[in-house]
Image (cartoon, rainbow, N blue to C red; front, side):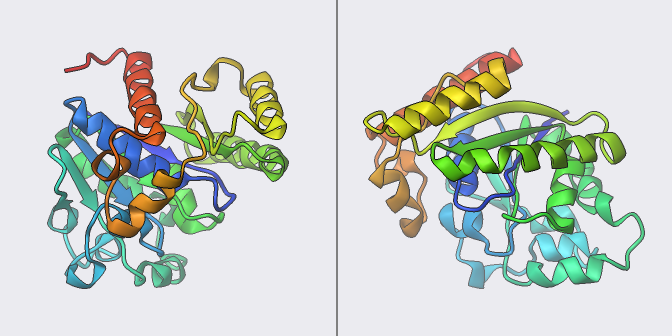
Length: 258
């Protein structure tokens, strides 16, 4: 039975999609079977892994609204061991349509429950807002990975983020846990990055991964080519950092590397 992890932060621009794509690719590269779910109407995970959204017949939208079976919506990527449940702009309308549906917070969980046994890990990319799509991501998840940008405003959102996590855990998903915190866009030459990293570690303690994702131009460029960092520039600092993060993730899970 696979584990479902939401890559979650209500703040935009913190590297959720970059983390979801590159962590998923790295873990697949270590011999695990991985599914990415693009639960963001912008569809950046879909295009960022090289899927042309114009060629998609059935997406997460159709699966959520039961217009297509979830298994028929999943696409194999070019990466061995990595599949994606893609998204298109049509997902933006799903939130409105979902409001009138019974048990609307559990629609995505119903989908993941049907395919969990096919994968070792399922990573869900959340939109940068707190709406029904994000709530569905948190309800479907066993745990959350939280990317935090090493900049000043990142700290302002931590209390709001934790409040959302606690409310969901109390009222909708009592088993939800924090998988880990990813320090992202870190610049060791910048005193602010060092200070933010220190404050995040003081707050989250051992939940913060030792692997730190640096601010890296190659990481920023890769999605525009529909490539993960491992396919775009495998020798870059970004690629090495995400490989280290994947190994640390699996080690914490007690999962053997292949």
